[in-house]
Image (cartoon, rainbow, N blue to C red; front, top):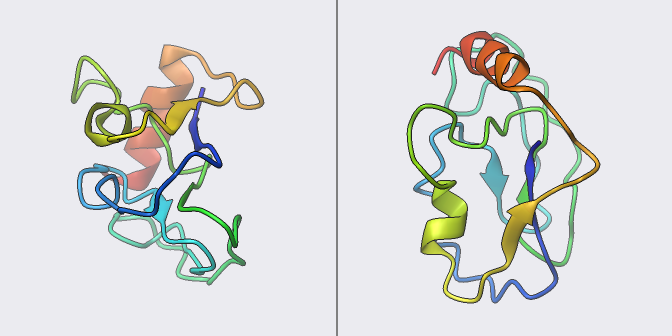
Length: 103
């Protein structure tokens, strides 16, 4: 299950540098699978949110095997990061995504 950033986000961007998958972007910012990963797809994609920072579900691995708690959750001063029930994935799927990203 990927994480999502709620409207409670204060745009401090403390979550962006701690994300091991480089899956978090500033509001309105375009993204690519290759950003900060070994993935080959450099095609820019439209921003998912124009109001808050956002997490790309296709890149989020829930910090699988790198932390006891998702790093975005740990650093958010207002608790704006939480699991996104629209993206339910097994541990195996998350580990496969991590391998695909080369992280």
